[in-house]
Length: 320
Image (cartoon, rainbow, N blue to C red; front, side, top):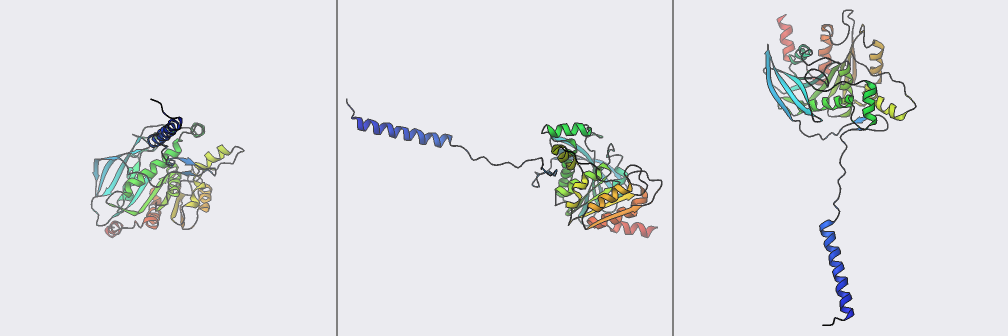
């Protein structure tokens, strides 16, 4: 049977068209969605994390009772690691509580910081104090500056950046707690914890404010290497403190602190924008970190940040 050439060519063309259409249908390129980077440091040395973070996965266990306070052990996930903390709550509360994320200084465990957390919680606040990386029950190791910079150069998240993210996840946990007023949550810290608190509050503008105790920025000099400069700026709270406004930031410091000088703390304060506060105590017996001589200033600072002055404080003064 003979087929005319014209019909043969038409059939071939139709076959090619059908094959092409089928190929496009089954193998057409899918639109690729641009995923938001989880961790980023821009050319100006600003660290950033997404604001639309997923709900925190956590476990809560009873830890104990201390007077009118209940204490729970918290284990929450942050960047595929478990962060351990203690949640301190008033036993009873008529209203939603302000929340405080409390970050200890370098090498200080949550248990060592527990008494300080209680002093805040008794003012009718929910306080979550954590073991930062490499301390207490939280795994990891706090690297040297050179080691963290090597991670940064290799495209790996430095530990000092991870600690900022851990603080943000602690904030997320309190924000979603049914007993916390999500509009009254601040991040507080001592020494290294104060530096992390300021950076975290600057990054997430939903955080109500920051409190730094016995803390200051890092006095780095710029180098000729832009990568070095970007890294050093990314871990320097002085680079961020001006970004917290119009939210509030407070620095509490002892004039006789033998680790962070008064001038360093004051220099950090000057870099902050209004509204801000600086509370100075003069205690020759207070070497570094929170001391009882700071208590009145602490209450004023927390009241300024999240309205923490409470009925409990009034009842204590009436009993004296």
